[in-house]
Image (cartoon, rainbow, N blue to C red):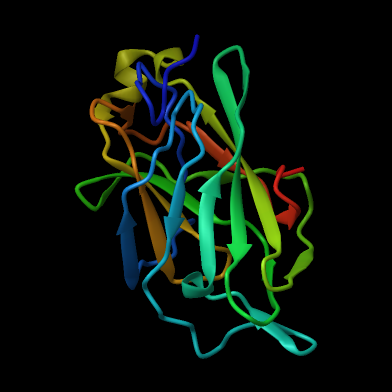
Length: 202
């Protein structure tokens, strides 16, 4: 059973949130995303905070949200779930790195709805270096909210999907179509893998 996350949801809605990372800066961008998700959505971060204690690998420092363009890749649906890569593209002129899991969650009017995405065990965490124009991606799984009982899910309307690049305190919000829904409880509707090279999430 599938629902459309960002494009006409009875929707699966995509989901996850930051794993507890407080949002100190958020850029809201109108993008076409789908919870059964069939469209590629694009959001460019305009927020700038770069933590002073940024991780470094060699001469390349961690990619700040302001240096990344965030998009949703092609979907692959299975019974009751949709898989879709979250793609991070380095729009800067120099190399930077990403390592670990992004934070993902549904939002409504800026407030988080439901549980943030859990972290998938695979792939294991590695440091990915993005040259200018290079990409890294993390595979997002969204379980159709209709899979859960009404009492377990308590579905509510959501307006966007908030994504934190790994290690970042700045986020990007991809707007979802009117009528999109997601579980408002602790139901584990979303899970996300660690970033890997390329745009497929695996």
